Image (cartoon, rainbow, N blue to C red; front, side, top):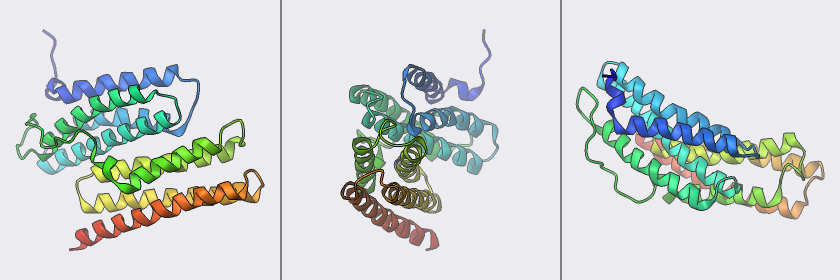
Length: 249
């Protein structure tokens, strides 16, 4: 009989390993490379690795911390699928189906993370919504709108690679940091990831200014993008202040 480590008996671990294989299949089948694809692979691998780490670190605090990272990475995977669907690298129906799989795993991870037992086990899910929590945030919806605007205005054929890659990375980073930050357990971590999303938004705005200064895009089009960035940044700063205040209290 095959010997199995204790975390390997968990459905959430086996499901997470299976999703890593799915993510690599998607990557290998795509002829288009965007930042969300690389982030999907990194985040997908982070989930089972941190579930395993939770089983090897003694003490509930260490276990919860590793499971917290896994939960954030799983939310990041879901947001990466949203971005890939916008880029039309993944059909919307395919993204939706994969997100349902991820949501089931997310529920299991929350149960593990919230467990007060000394050893890992799977409890009944405590999160029953039909979507990820970050999908209800206005700043997340705005960040996806910014990605859509980017895909409508720029491509590798119309914009030189350094500028295209910079805009792609920054826009994707906003989306993924919102998702991961919202999934984190502590107010301090939430505020930290929302600040990273703010930093990515400001970098995106700066790259737009560079593109405009070089005459690579009409000013009228750039202004719409800058407006979207400003709106998302204001919402993120509000969330950051909220969680910082809770942390300080």
